[in-house]
Amino acid sequence: MRFELIRRDRASLEMALMAPVLALLAAGLVSWALFAAMGVPAGRALWTIAATPFSTWYDFSEVLVKTAPLLLIAQGLAIGFRARVFNIGAEGQLLIGAICASAIPVLLPSAGSPLLWVAMMALGMVGGAAWAAIAAFWRTRLNANEILVTLMLSLIAAQILTYLLLGPWKDPMGMNFPQTRMFQPGALLPGLLPGTRVNLSLLFGVAATIAAYVFMQRSVTGFRLIVTGTAPRAAGYAGVSAARGVWLSLLISGAAAGLAGAAEVAGPLGQLQRSISQGYGFAAIIVAYLGGLHPVGIAVSSLVMSAIYIGGDNAMVFADLPQSAVLVVQGLLLTFYLIAATFVRYRIAWTGTARA
Image (cartoon, rainbow, N blue to C red; front, side, top):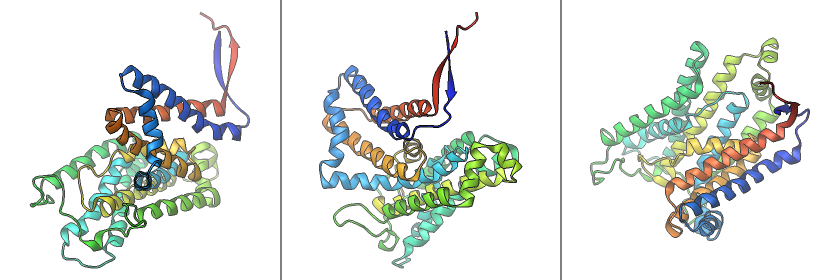
């Protein structure tokens, strides 16, 4: 007996909307089994992850803080993913964006402009885009796999960050911690909600969502990108440049990741640290797919993933959950979503008995 996956003539919209919900339920069920096998109070751990991020105003504000970088990065990545350009190195682009943005307050500590953060955001976007451009060059000129190139560039970016924080940019008064000095007030993003760490970067994410929707759903360039990814031969016959699609996809996603990195150092951190990112660049990949690569869906999934971050931190304290367990939950979400999305687009067909 042999089974095959046959592509459906038309995917069901209802099932497409149900796919992330089913993935959440399946990931929760498997996580409960894993936590129980680890000897952790599974019910309490899951409840802490799911409920505590929304139980107090402080916890919810922290969810919004983490939503901002995830939303920015995921919207940029989704544009490339729909064009079949797979940027896996947003983590490195975030780090380079943070480094470039930090150069202004670190090298110009006496600069007192109240809008210093504007230049930092612009420089962060340029840095992230430039780092992604390296992968675009290798892909279009030598047909190098952008997955491997962007991933390896992330490792290089991490080493550059370490060198700067342990060398020329290290705060001499920082008690030997690998970090820069605290930035001056003009280099910090304005706050949005008094008494919380929520800042202007959340509006950056909202603006990116609107821009991504208009670009991919209403613009000719966005349509060409989608055609390049779904029907490359048809795009070639129509004169659409595949190389241009690669460059555009990587530059957009790199700039978005660089902006997220700049917003982190100018926002909740207020300085450049080695722990600037908590895996946002990789978690954003899950966010993009969990949102169905659609700007509105990504906005919802970024909020869900941020809640898992905060709930996971709380579970480590109140349910003795190890930090790695949160990464497992994130991985399960992506795995089950990909399975569910496969059955949205394909159906199982019995093709008879397989020959020996």
